[in-house]
Image (cartoon, rainbow, N blue to C red; front, side, top):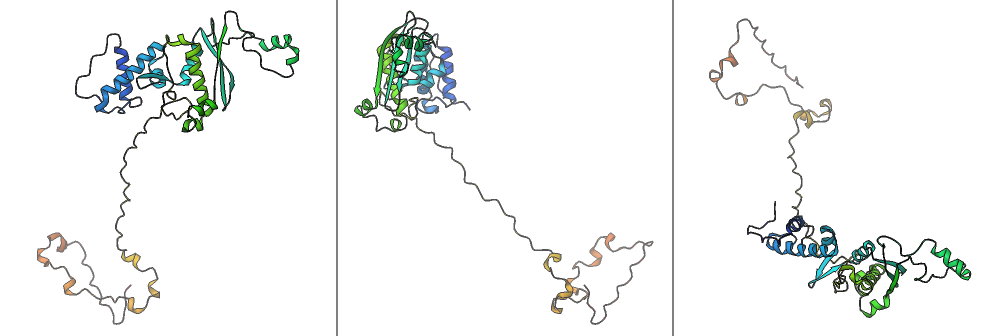
Length: 314
């Protein structure tokens, strides 16, 4: 059943008809409803909020579902996750980043700019061998190579961004549940977003974006996805116990399990003819003709012999 309300929805802006239709589908699926989980009362607001994410995604060069899933709007500000920021830097032709140190205590990232950096390394091949040839004394210690050594032609080191657990403590972040569970990932999110703003500002046309954690939202995963209220489980009817058929009285053949010969005489029934009160109450004349008329060609049944005195029938 569709969740469309009865009132007429507003006409989408020119050029955004396909995005508006996609937003309606996403809201009706109840997977991406922003506020009311796709309820008819908040349908227009849910579609508008999903449309804002899609429009921000268009500015960032993202697809519809990627934008809706990776961008959150907190206090009117678009807030991409740290993983989405890193992915956009990797895909950009003029920006790149590299991990220098990444632990649960510190995350240090180097940022580069140049040409043809999309999904590529900013360094030339054989960088370590060239450094060891120039500095034989470091080949045994494996000292870190200077970040600016061995860069590809036209590539420059823009800077290094660092975020430590001490910085998180000073910002009173370590008391949050996500920082206790995912300290390494949260340090990376802070370092990559602050580094993007400082060393890759043209990534999204100069827009200053912040992760949900930077805007004070609680997150529950290492990709900084804001905590959403859990959907109430569907009410289930209490299972009814299976109906039990009433037990029937056992048949005469099932009443006595012991052989008749082993039963006392008090349990034996003498073979007596039924009394007149036990015979059919309807007179013989009232019965159908077929029940008391004997055909001429049928032999008459032999009369039953009376039981001898003291004789028992079984």
